[in-house]
Amino acid sequence: MSETVAPRCGLVAIVGAPNAGKSTLVNALAGSKVSIVSPKPQTTRFRIRAVVMHHGAQIVLVDTPGIFAPRRRLDRAMVAAAWGGAQDADRTVLLVDARAGLTDPVRAIAERLRRAARPIWLALNKVDLIEPPRLLPLAAELNALVPAEETFMISAEKRRGLDRLLDRLAAVMPPGPYLFPEDDLSDVPNRMLAAELVREQILRQTHEEVPHHATVETEQWTERADGSARVDCTIYVGRATQKAILIGDGGARIRAIGVAARRELEALLERRIHLFLNVKDRPGWDEERGRLRALGLEDEG
Image 1 (cartoon, rainbow, N blue to C red):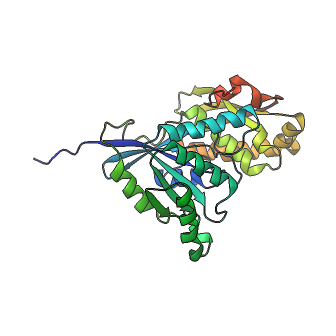
Image 2 (tube, one colour; image 1 turned 90 degrees about the horizontal axis):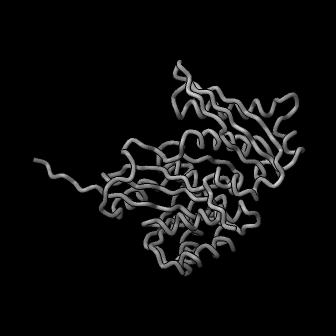
Image 3 (cartoon, rainbow, N blue to C red; image 1 turned 45 degrees about the horizontal axis):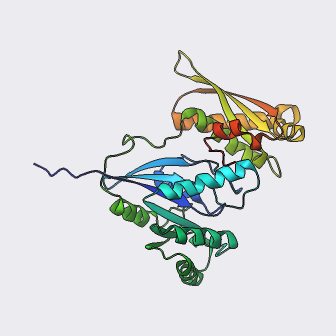
């Protein structure tokens, strides 16, 4: 008889400054898109859990919002979600953009992690984009601020160094039952996934003030007899001028956003989706408790 291996399972929080590459890393480790990605900072707004099975261990990756100086109620809720993810985790991976180096935001995050006295791992990301001699001094500087149990040199986008990171994470996951079915990829509901994919296209296809002053809610998800689904999403923006930019000349921009988001959603769910978008200007939505709850965020007052 073969010996039964006891299951191991744990939570791993990926934290860092905006644009460190957290969502790219989580998607790469999961082997599938579970978190939206864009070149703009502060893309992720709430904690997304991705489920990775590796060497018999279930690694639940928590992709957190980038940690930054909050101004709006939305900002405060996002930062609280990031720190909450780190507080709950068995391991916290501090992801640092190696090109940017030890910036003030990274220094502030490292200081707070040090005070929390929890197991910290350091991952220098985008190492393919800088000269190798810069890496060891940067790692030493960071370890002086927050001593890391392990240090990894990776490129999330090129998938370099990720095998070692996964191997080590699997090895340290504590004994315990799996939190999710083994074939689950994420705990993001389909309604929230649809809204996030629409928001990703807003981030990619609009500029200046529009992307970070827009939120998306799935108002209705209707299953159809032919196996497809009708999905109705509303995009809220802060001002009428932002609404006009989103809609575009003759509705061209909102159609392009809808087509791209629908294709992504169909590819992920492997089914036909009929996506309908509506745009409303709602000044101050990012200060509304109801809007924050719809995003899965807790109001921090």
